[in-house]
Image (cartoon, rainbow, N blue to C red; front, top):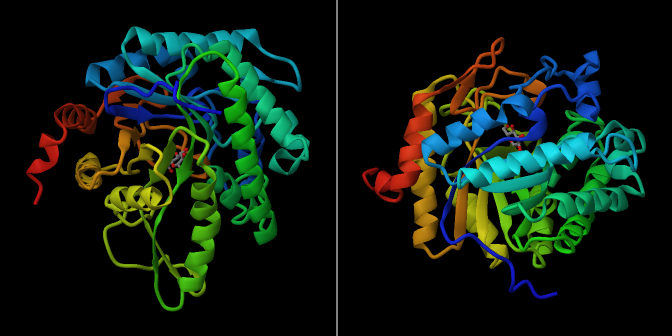
Length: 396
Ligand code: BGC
């Protein structure tokens, strides 16, 4: 199939990103809702009302517009659209149509993710990504979404970080379904790639001519003390197989946060250097590293669909973003086809097993009133984006 008709936006995309479950609130019909209530899950607290963005999305869009950003990446929840197998909620589709229309009214490009970590309970109970029917089910969900929303979507990400779903759910036992098996991790990665293709093809068959791809979690890996073999196997499963598989797509989404150090025994947690609130190494240059690495595998346009920092120190966030944008400029100067950058995240939101402690937002959210307060980094990022590349030119 030729993709010549695909419409890529002319302007570089300066965006911010969120996901449905992390900000909407009140979605009891997912595997995560059940997981976070299980004392064995290790989740700090339940998601609860999140940022109440299900009701306050207009306010969120107003903030994005006021910062001068031209794109918003958010996700839609399968559990809301298909609460039980085969039952489609028209009101949920209507809601997401309204969010897309709200973006369009404000000249914000809606970048829509179809799967961001959560599964409807009926899917999870039937085996989740290990069910023999998952590819069919998720493809059908994409068909429903494409038919209902396709004429408004600006860009679609089928799956967010399919490799993290596999890693955290099936190898590290930190996300549902809390499994720890290299074989099952490898299998689920393969299934995720098949899910992506089914979703992509279903979206393409519907209205609209927007670019479609998936958003991959990438790392800058450093091997120390005999860690080379493990780094090679991890890269193979977490990145290379995915990067080799995307030739039929319209773009590749790259997401990165840090550099990971690996020795012969696995992740090295005791290292020198500035840390973020997540305990990660403060390493904004991972942007240029991962974008460059993705470009070694594919000529597709690249979008940095997530990058950011969890921190209580907003000055640290500004420093991080500045260095990240500086790296972005370097890869662009080298001629890499980068079409956009999405800061994670618009709001301080539900950070999965960590609960609400990590602050990834450029906008603070009061946990009782849900009042939004843009931080200095929000103004800084809006201005930096509008003035890029001049805003990074002065950095030594
Ligand atoms: C995920 C987000 C998460 C962010 C920060 C990414 O892996 O897509 O859902 O909040 O990282 O940890």
